[in-house]
Image 1 (tube, rainbow, N blue to C red):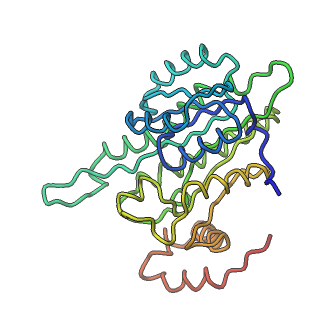
Image 2: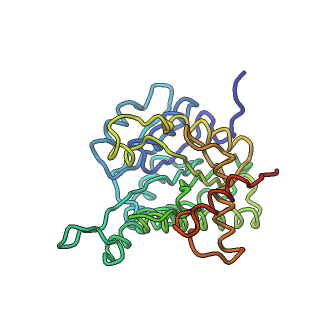
Length: 301
């Protein structure tokens, strides 16, 4: 029996996808094309973008594919893109998927160590891509998406977040965690604004992938780890969540169940609510209590 679909996935609708040349972005483009959608593919990797476009070409039955090699952190690139799309897609876009992201490493010190706290450029560049790359896209296209001409068709905005933006695990990439925490906040505010302004035809969704075999993971694993999902699995789960009207779409993987994700997130919130130290799940003086607390936690719907 066919799975229900969010109505934005329909023949003739247009999807704009950033980070579209690989991973979840490319898998989403393939999913959209399966449902007869036009594609606007954006990426900063020109070669990979051309390869992606060659696998999803424009077709004789009126589905089109256009590509734009650009830096999502550059607002002028977005403005140029908008001018181009206004010409090539006069009906506008229906699905805005803000997905481009990067895990930038701090510059090593003279001793060879990577200290994120002494590298301001590392923070600036990470936030520019992973957070401002999203707000640039929203600022550029929000008026088009929310304009009401005739009977408003179903539209959607998806922002790719991260569990790291919620549970905030310590390590060598605090800028990435911070950038994704900001994306969560932005998505929540955007969703409420559109609800409050009664744009009932425009849904907003925060995609929170689990362990997924994307380019960021491939840097560390030559083969897919058993615990990871493939990007296509994430997109199927995303589609299901959108059809169910969910804003928070938290994906499990082959290592972490939905229930365990919920427990970890609740424990992280508990650090604030109960006045515990920061990030108790990882502190040596709290690890055992935290692990026991998560295990004993009961989740009720």
